Length: 123
Image (cartoon, rainbow, N blue to C red; front, top):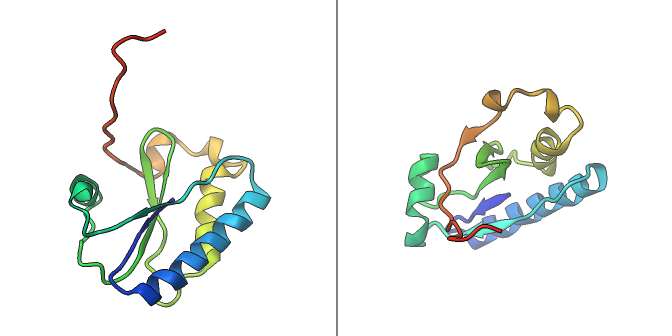
């Protein structure tokens, strides 16, 4: 999961608590790893990420995204006061749940451009 912070510290703390609770519940229900990475929207190194996701960098509210597979991304509904750990759990269930194998790869999520170094020698 990617957690993109807002400019409001209190809002971030509340949202992070909700996200962590949803992840904790998901870990009890499903096999698989669920990680959490925080992103600072003012970090210039994240420019490509924000452009690719077509997200504003104004930091008005936190954003939660699930990144999985070979660079697919699903957005958790906007936080605007109605966001709960059940929203996070729903995304965890889609990604790790027993029925995800029946979902066609082209139907789930949006492609996320990824850059990583390729080793010169492969063993």
